Length: 215
Image 1 (spheres, one colour):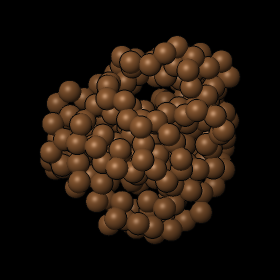
Image 2: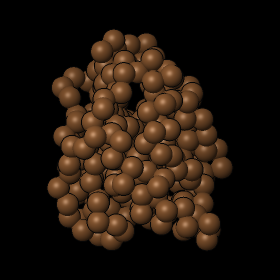
Image 3: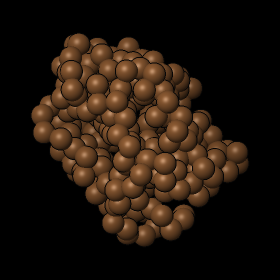
Image 4: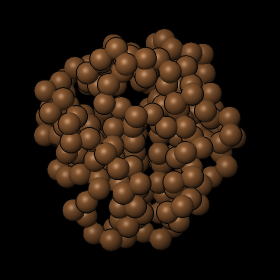
């Protein structure tokens, strides 16, 4: 799921990663609100649950995570964590009503294979919520620059555009909504902002965009 080379990084610096939410509390709360707007009823899973920050806040009961240190933090937040990788999920066919992927896409070895697996584990009509930092947003450009400078996390990240994610999802048989829930329109910085429902074509300009798709 996360790149093979990055798993040791997330294990070693799990608490540093989690502390980002403490240091950027207004931004984090804005993102939580955006995610919560799209969570449906039923049994859900967060793929790449990390430290469980989002799952714990919005009530996603199950998470998939390959980094053991991250998984332990998520369990501490009450998330039932399955240790495994997104490219080969140890989960049954058509077993979930919804799946959520938050930022994890940029750390995947093979996003297409992981999204194929998500399609497999979703029930017919199940929903996938994919939240990304769009590559062409001010946040995307900022994180990519940090990566070029050797940042321990962003140096192993690959950011995608909203259009690229939409194209892959549709090629796998998902129906992608023409609307997105997006937040962080005022550039880089820690600030609170209410999420907006925007046309998918306009979501690229936001620092955090959630794309909704149905199997």
